[in-house]
Length: 584
Image 1: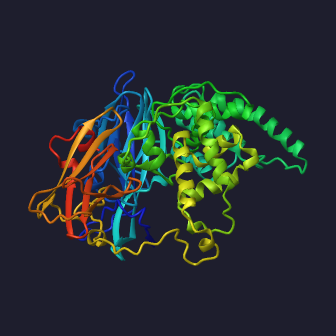
Image 2: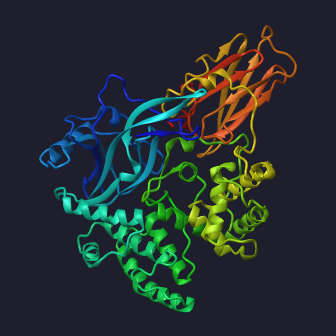
Image 3: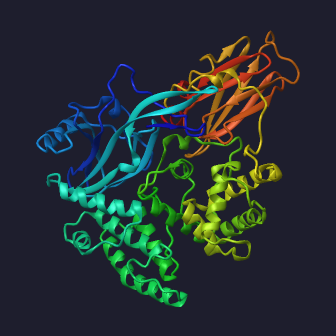
């Protein structure tokens, strides 16, 4: 099956080698082995019918701690894990160790290549005296990718984020097929809005040596079931709203304590545990105790519940790079919260103030924008006339019953939960939606076959007609590869302002012999995670300048239209660039 990637989805393609056979579908596994009290070891292995270690997939796997430091893999530990797994054959094939890391218990960020060619991040927990096991399913695919004005077919492989399975086991216990089956069943309930856990699942989750993650999944299934409108989990729905409300309250009274008991033995600062406690408190009508997260959660549902808490009560989701990436780069990976690694590179031409505000100011700042958005008549406009972000806000508002006369903080919290967007990001998206709607010719959009709000007549610059060939760096190699051409030179300087943002100062200088006339302009093409991802800037005193704030290296392309000159500079290759630019 061939899929088509839109221009916003097509950037990070890693082509499969033309002379290599398509890899068979397999699985990969991350095992966390205990190395003393309070210590753990996270190892990455692949389960595949193909014999041998997959070195190409291994090169894309990295593990980061909460300070965003990459952890070094131990070759000795890899061999030890391989020896342990070598006698554990399964129906799916053999286990092959790829990497191993010595860690402490806590939350880690795992990065791997997805089956769409993107680098993907998601949270991996490590528990004391247990092994964390992560099963990745390797897939192959052909995608149609824009190449100028046409499309080309690209083949690649990677792990499917939606098919990831994570569980834990005792340090010395063998791999348990039954435990894997139960974990997959609970995750399918989370993915597909399944029923409450039955007696067998609850008995396993409540046992003395139960997997803490199975406890978490079972609790999340329960809370998700209590949260679904109209779902009384086997109870006959009554036509009388009062009766339905009484039935739901009875279910909450019955099942909420079960969920609370399941997560009680887990670390209480675990983001998913905090999210569950927040949602249970909301179901009971109680204000939860506030806290600030140290990392995003594992589960997509948890992210939505925390986003609601952030809008209603504030000071919950920090404005750091990882949280920003999880918000802006989130991909469909239910039940997991997974995001594009490249989303961390996102910056703006002018740095925004991301300081925390109290809950009242968050709601106060958000409400007028939503009210203005709801006041605009959009009846009959096709979703194709709007960006996905704007349409999702409008559809989300309708889904939670958010109307102009019912603009309460609770409804805004419902909107944040349904979209899984924290307060700072929701406020930005509402502002962008208002700006987009203000530029639409509604008369043209209604019933028109061409739903584009604006239509450019400008010819596409030649560099953009060239295919994207570099993984996670869409401008690499498309603008000629030279930073100095015909007297025009592209340069950059950096200023490390804080732990989250790097000031990037781009400059094009024209020497005295360069062909520069009054009114000439240059267009800077940035990483596709910037919004917008290109800026046209005129020359002043023979220089064209663009100041950015971002995190992570990428290639900048420049097009001078009158001169038909191309310039290119890879920021990650600058010798004195900050670590955050060279290694991200």
